[in-house]
Image (cartoon, rainbow, N blue to C red; front, side):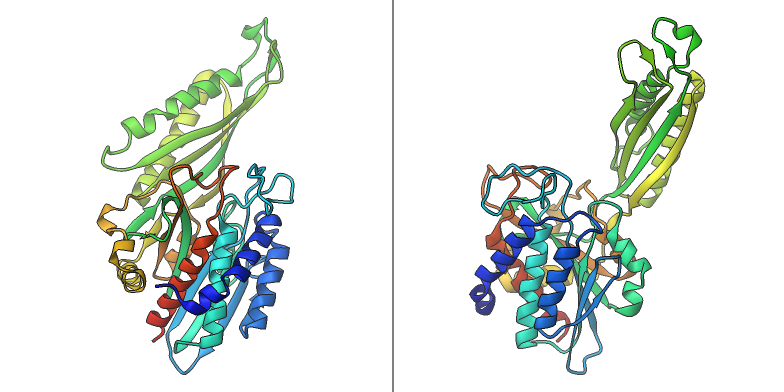
Length: 388
């Protein structure tokens, strides 16, 4: 059952969400967004700290003399893509869009924050963490490196993400690995450019790059246990400018995903061996540069059962997926860095309206505003239960 006072403010929270949506900001550029969040938290009586991770915001509310400390996180950044929805509140910024629903995550946590500040139905310390740059180079890690959990110690940490491919209002999660690790890297190849009519006087990095692309496909099929999951993707092979010039350089952009640390290490090792071996066989020099990586999103079993029970109590067991039937996703999430530091759980909140819903990262994606009050109610109930 949704909390009446949260529903009373639903229209205001929808307006805040749509304002964020109209003014999307990329990772570490969330200046307007963080200003608005800090302003609201201040108004409601939170102690506000800014600057962690650049644009991060932490709102702290202490009630009573309870010793437990709870963290709840929402991400703030948008994606570098052009919106095509045509909605009245569509992005007003060319080439930027809240296509992953982080505007909704902020509105959900702000809605809960308002209720918790006005009613204070707990005993302990609550840290609301608004994090920059989930989509790019790991704002969670940047906040941690800046001292997040030293300044704001948490006994448990929770986060959620909207999921438009499951029914609106359904809660879904599982203990252990929920989402994959992700590692991106750039391979730079140097050959010897020349005229396309005289390949014998050149060393063609395009051919070497093509061979590397094909050879990398054998890692999952021949080097990974069939009972383990792994993905290796070459998202880009860039070389050359025209028909009759053999280029001097080529660049490959790679991404790999796994669900176990040992598989992650093994796949990295095979990528390096294949790239260097293939390059040498073609007489090309190869350099592998790591771009960034996220660990596996690993839910703590005890905190996951707690999070599931809160959802069952709040909405009824029929609205909570059986964790044994939840499939691990090969997408990744930098909340994983927080889960490495503090036991906790990451939850998916269904926001689907029907079969024609577009998933996240699509130019026609739309956040379901009806789920703001659902998510806010969940955060309130979780706070009440954890900080009794």
